[in-house]
Length: 211
Image (cartoon, rainbow, N blue to C red; front, side, top):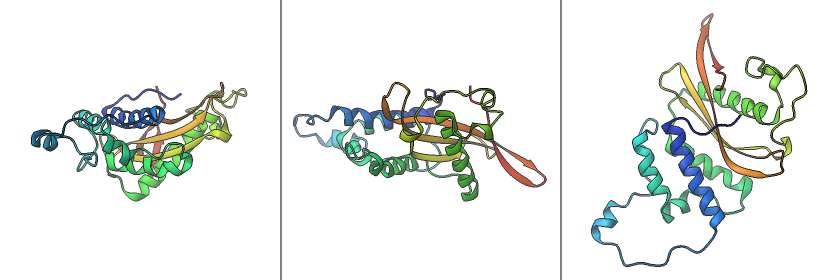
């Protein structure tokens, strides 16, 4: 049930992830040395360390992020060493957090991340779907073959951020898994959207069905 990015935020994250994956697959020598840059080009070149100073990325920042992620210096800082596997996941987490600074109370963020991780695992492997009957209505009727193997499923990074208002949030997850055909792919992106409801003075984050 994973889908392509549907917002500027996911466009930005997908661009970074795809740039990282592309360089890892190429694995070839870097570009040949060219003439030294002029003072103008050296000043105008986007910095690999440049991230939004506050708030979430916008459609305007996606362009500069794409340009920065395409430069060798950006790839060196963002891309985990080729073949690192689990050891490279912290670098992905750091880049997500840098691209979209935290904007939720710590308690809400922890609750959303826990729910988002559980939902992703249920969605991809089938484990725990009975806990979310409103999201997986067919889970109790018959056995459904999972799209991804439980043993090869791994969440590489995750962040929870506001989604336009204090009562809406989205959990972005980057993950790896082996599908039914035996193909293992990492840097997959999935998002879950939540709405905050208050009952008897208690706030609860409720996931919204994915379309």
